[in-house]
Amino acid sequence: MSIISNFALIVNVNLLCYNVNVKKNNGYLRIIIGLAVLYLFYVAGKTLYQSYQVRKEVDDLKVSITELQQSNKDLGAQILYYQSPSYQEKIARERMGLMKPGEQVIVILPEAKNQVAEKDPDDALPNYQKWWNFFFKS
Image 1: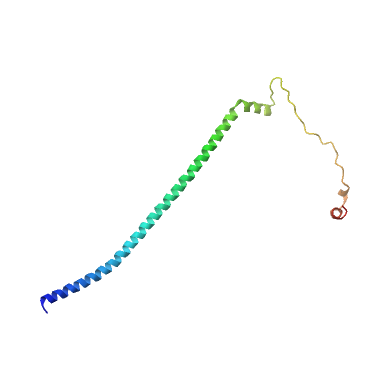
Image 2: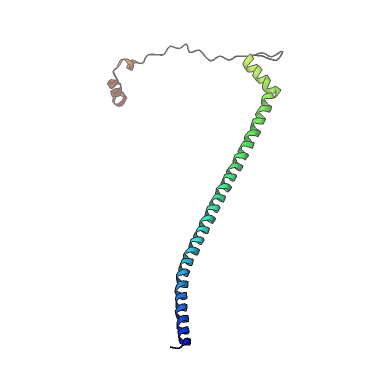
């Protein structure tokens, strides 16, 4: 064989080896790129979920703040009412029995129950007799 044909044979063999190596490396490269893409999706999903949780917690805290502000306003109104002269006068009348000059206090007592309860003639009967009378002697 001639030098040129030997050289061509060597080049062909080298090119075949190169193609085999590139194909092997290309497969590994695809696997590495696929894993990198999966990892990026995982990181992006995790970040979005954390963002959702933070947003939800902020919304819950805003609702809680609104409720507490309303409660605070209500308590402030109660404090003003309890410090007012009309409330203090009402409490003085109810608890201490105070009255204004020229005023008369009237106390209404409940009616006394002086009536003696009449005895029912069926009270002396046994229970089964009461049921018999209830159903059949009405």
